[in-house]
Length: 391
Image: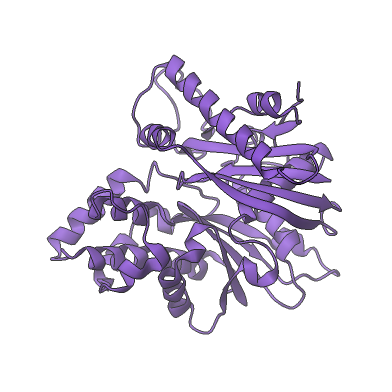
């Protein structure tokens, strides 16, 4: 079945679109990437999204207009990725997250102090509009059902990673490094035991979010990211400051856990920059080297603290997997454990997350639950996504 997966992550670079041929169900799941492309946001639209993510208030009418504009861009990405290929039968769209509040973070509200501590996650880019513009059945709003079951609604893809990357006699950590980092721990596949129950996953903390914000600040807007980590690699790491930053409560909170720009965004970067100034770190390269080390350290600290054992292999994906300096720092902290990318095992590191949402849509259509309660904290497995039929 030809399915399109669409996602824009917390880095807000644009829409990752993947046209995927999917067959099987779970243990026999097979995916083939037919085409993948990132459709960049127009600069004005990206600026609007980043402003909302940073907490800028919008009247409801303007929020609705932004929702429509994002949906239109996602629909255009879906149409573009099909050029020269057969028409897809289904679209799975994650949308653009603009706010994420994990389950249990707020115990009550002034409006209703009895309200349950459910999470809240808002993705713009309405699925009904995508279905209308493309005339293709679209499944969206994947997080809502898990949140209704008491979960975080994140991370969303560890169950898929388990079936795509599971190997006999070898455990894997699939580490996505987008704006926020998240992992899926996939134990060695043993057909004689319930290995699926040992799959784990959670958000590890900042991925590219702080790095990209810092690059934009330190370059006065001339750059949006540190290509291959070259700028950071030219600096010196302040390890004592990294150790201090690692005392943040999120890094010590046991899973299930999720986070976003609400925690590791502009305000957190401002505090980091202030800490750098107070510790005599004034060179831009030294600041970036130290922030890059925080991402590497938060990832490896998470493994060492919460995994039952360190993995036999780490597979990186997402935009951060292209940052060679960051990859080197993760490798240095994991010593002899190989750090590769999902490209090395046949799944595109650039489009792995988009592929995952194509699979989630495919599972929803075939009545297969998509969440892992041990990962999200939900009380039970649920079908993920709302179905919108094309016009």
